[in-house]
Length: 489
Figure (cartoon, rainbow, N blue to C red):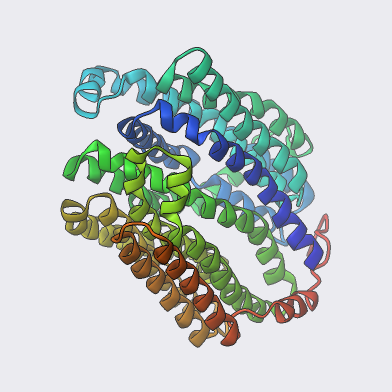
């Protein structure tokens, strides 16, 4: 079981690693082609398309995972579940996207005048949502089947070919921003047939309206929680546009791109963790203790990675980008640790999800979204991109705390409070120290100070036994969920 979990996480991570590695390898090329303002345009369009994607998905991916692994769901019902959900997702995505494109057509001049990008760029981003939504649904089926290699093949095909296609269109044919979006649209369309082929055993020519309604009823609250997440992660870009300028939007977008290093780690863990946790809950009486230990270890492990990115943000930008991009270092310092806190929600939200109280997730997310808007309104006019990053950090801290509070009320676990508090203090100290050191001109003394701080925080964590690898291995070895059976009473 332990080998299965870590092997799956490694395979899921490999797919993201290949894509992220290529993205960072070609980033210096893009940095010398695109201006900071053009990166801001990419961020604006991407966040707008992401908002639309929330309504296209209908929460069906979440419903699929919940009901497919339900002990009362039989083999034949699983196939109808997958097929019915896929039919609804594909039909709704195509119809809604076409309608939206028609509706925004009259506002083409406004987009150009106010936000400085053409209508075609937005159309391409919206159209890309269709194959991406279907592809992600298929990938979730593969995750449920514990097929990380097939998942990774489709992920690499979409992400890597998207990078390659975009690079060719931009560098060779000179399409610039149009080439960026055309490349990712073509890659998603190319990966779609293979993903459908991989799940062909779960595809049947029968639409089950009752199952489709059941999936929708369970899943639609995730639209609202997802919308709140969008406000948390993306509205700051639009607020930066309104309260600051496109240069600050660009700096924030660049910081978010580098913070994706931690998003990659989050994703690798999450792809393996979700089905693993559901199986443990269904089959292992000791799941609460395992969830507790995983929360402590995951938080500290992710914090360790976040410290590297936060403390050495300037050095990373100095190596990979032109001088115009270097002011994004302070934003990256805060946003990196915000991404760490976001990563903890994969475990802190678990109790709410297991109790099927999806409305609680939406309520918490919306409350924090309002907090985020307030913080952005307060910080952006004064601090620009850095203010947006700090607002994101604080908002994610509140979100994970709320999730943990309600999870403890619904499905309590024996959390290790002292260790979690210590790790949270390290997160905050890292941001303060990183930004303070960025206020000084770079020197060998500053670099040594960063290294000493990193070593000190890691030493404190290990001295306090926040992370004990041997204990983690022992706990995981004690669990051995049975293989997923065809039928369960």
